[in-house]
Image 1 (cartoon, one colour):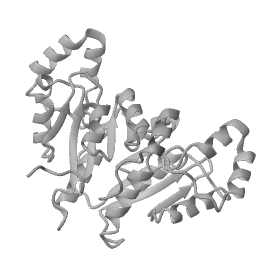
Image 2 (spheres, one colour):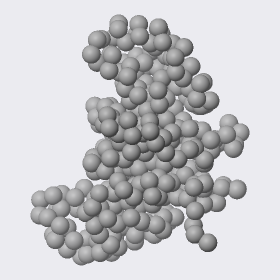
Image 3 (cartoon, helix red, strand yellow):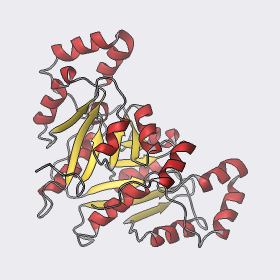
Image 4 (cartoon, one colour):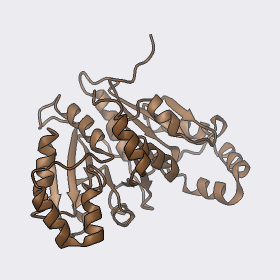
Length: 316
């Protein structure tokens, strides 16, 4: 019988997101693929250090050890590497005890066509083009931000903590564009007038709903995932967000309406394993404290395609 992915939380992650490959990537960019291949082959016995996506992956895989949750989370390596250059990565996976056995090794080709084939719920990569194509096709995806720090292994993970920005991440950028083009007063007036009108779903709405479905299998005290909304909105613009989540039947565990206060300290206090935001300025500053990923805006064609073909329903 074929191994089915439909009832699993499927995470696709690139090698550069999972491990620290900054030196290796520099060799590739400066000297080309042959020098990169030679370096990787010569260092196959050297274990790679954890990268910015490592804490989230390790935490999510811990769900599989919970009673009744065996195999619930599937993490798949999705890389532009070739099979020949991947041995070091899999030796590192084995060294850290990560239950990752499946991979897409595209040999330099785009990964986008394979994301839907693997029923991917979330895709993390350092390569912007693949992430953009994923978002355009309706898959939650983020460009992982390397904060240039050590990503230590967390032992005895009790709860996974995932934080989201609101506008242009959970919701579309409709309201944010009003703020950018017309200013704060126009934005707040728009949100006041539309307080009872739910915001449209953004790139990560479906992923949040998938997580929420998993959370509902547990009591709030025992849920393996805890979510947070961390947004620059403040009152009165908060009301539309609250009503939108209520309309989606979503329970956000914690919400922070910061009104321009720095997100970095809040996310550090929350203990986020990852934070998703649409602005590079935010992910860049936050990444010094917690792992973060930037969510690119869907291109217009991608938005239209997603409305015609909303994709897999939330079945986790």
